[in-house]
Every structure is written in C-alpha cells, then in structure tokens.
Image 1 (cartoon, rainbow, N blue to C red):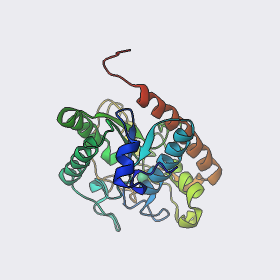
Image 2 (cartoon, helix red, strand yellow):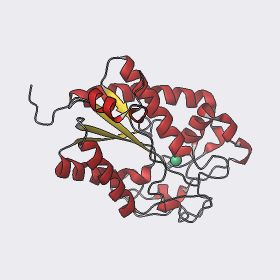
Image 3 (cartoon, rainbow, N blue to C red):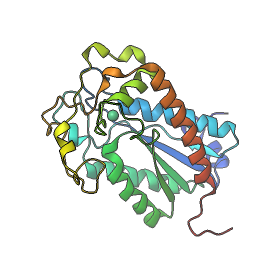
Length: 257
Ligand SMILES: [Zn+2]
C-alpha cells in the first residue's frame, strides 16, 4: 500500500491516519549548485532520501506517511546566481505554518520536516515551535542526510557545504546523467579557516551570501566526487532516517509511559 498520502482519497486518508501517525514533509530547494550540478540538487536529495526512508519504515511496520516535497524554499543566499528560484523567508514561513494548520486538521499529530537545504534550517526550527504552540502538533526537524563533517571531502577543510564532495557524489548516485564532472572545480574559501571562532560550524556564525567569498558560488570540492561514495552516503542516510523515524514515533516530551 502506498505511503504517499496524496495518492489516497481524503476519506481513505482520514481513515488511515491516527494520533500516532507520523507525517513527513520534505523540503528541497531549486538553486544554483555550481556549473556541474542540476538546480534541483537539494530537491532531488531530500525527495529521494525521504521517500526511500518512509517506504522502508512502513515495511518495518511504522505508521509513517509522506507529503509531496516543497521544491521552492529560502535560497536567498544564492539569489544572485542563474536559475535560483527562491521565495522569501516570510512567504516560506507562512507556507509551512499554513500547511501545519492543514495537517493538524487530520487525525495525525506528528510532523517531521525532512530538510535538504541548509538555508531553511533556522526558519524550520522557528516553524517547529510555532506549529507546536499554535496547533499542538509535535514537530521535528531532520536533515536529509547523515550529518556532514565526517562526510566532507578531504580537501574541503570543513567548508564543503554546497555542491561539494557529498552532494555531487549523491547526485552521481541518484541521477548521474544530470552531472557534468568535467565542469566541477574546487572552490573552498580557505581564508575562513584562519578564523578560530567565526565559521559555518563554529561558535560564532555569520550572515553570508554565497558570492561573498570570492569563489564561484560552490562551497566545497566536487572534483573527487564519485557514485560509489554517493551510494554509501545515500544508504547511510536512509538507514539513519528509518531509525530516527522510529524514535519520532515513540517520542513523548513529557516522558509519560
Ligand atoms: Zn545543496
């Protein structure tokens, strides 16, 4: 049986869902990913990992359902680059709050944002609390892939956050015909590494646009990307998401037995 909620009739959906059901809403992005990757990279990754994870979780007996992936999100850091299709933070906030309102009108009470684009993170954290307070939903925010860091490419200095080794490898695994590795270039803002406290994953973060760094808009080193690594990362991400969804299913913030 399908776990894509919108493939059911409204009547069947209402009958299938209960307060224990978990609804997964993937969030992608359509944005410039260097000359070598498709605009749909974040959409593709969020959509593929989320659908595979929900399918596998359902096979394992979990009461989990998936909604269509939101394609257009908050990509204003790449606003300057060709092909980026972005909506403003307040439009996206309004959209996810109103979708949460609709979800809260179903019997389901647990919502997981399954996010494939870093630029959405802060906003979705705020949305999680907003939906908790306004509609009583139990909300969660999950990254589409296992945490980066350990998965950065060797030449990325921890700065491989966009169109670099991991993302390029994942797309080489999922849709190799959409990648042109001959155009891939290392583009790492090494000068950032001279700051001890300020950085993407450090104690002090900063507001940035992807054309601030004097690089080509890629932040990472895609040159060593390969499909085998992409397959490994995809599998690890799906397996981890299935485990995380099982925890979501039994999660109770009040600790009641
Ligand atoms: Zn991306």
